[in-house]
Length: 284
Image (cartoon, rainbow, N blue to C red; front, side, top):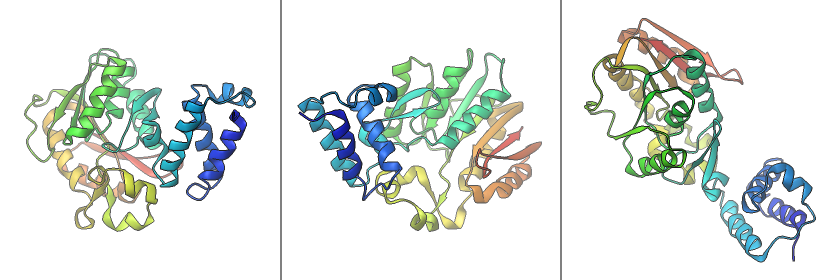
């Protein structure tokens, strides 16, 4: 019977062609921790323990998928986001660390406020509205999304944590009927913002597996979602309400300018932890 140490080595070596070190080592650790139901500390302390035949088979099946460059989050069916363990599959984008920074910014700027009304647009797995709902006292939170498949994932994530988010299935380019005019305190959105021309710089595992509907915008109209969501936000936000966007780092100044021209009283570009223009905040 194989032991933990051998299986960890096997995973690392088997996926080395698709994932160079140190990434292969990190993925092997995450995979074993998940299959063996151990924390990382427990994993390092149990290197000489046996792995059951069932667990070994599970690891081998996962390796086959990883060798095809399928993202580890889809292989495991979960991703960690702002303290939540969310279900993810090919119907939704994998939540990114930059998006956690967006959630963090919103929570910091509204600390101590209760009963806020919040809408997230292009909600995907539900990561933003769920994290906000989990961390905001008595907030009324909505998540809007066009994809039925994505909303099914978001709903199951909400059910897991018993979070009272209201899900709206609709195209943002249609009028938003279900929310009253000037009734919201906060709108957040991480809309599609990768240009078609940027495809060749993207990793094959993203291109092959993640939903293109949630990723790409036409090169000829990179800001189409920002323009539309800004117009929707002007109608739905209360005076003094705030709009938060995650953006393509190339477009900070242009999104800021678009918001000011649309009629927001102020708009600021905010950098992420590695110094890239990543968010824009605007006040109604």
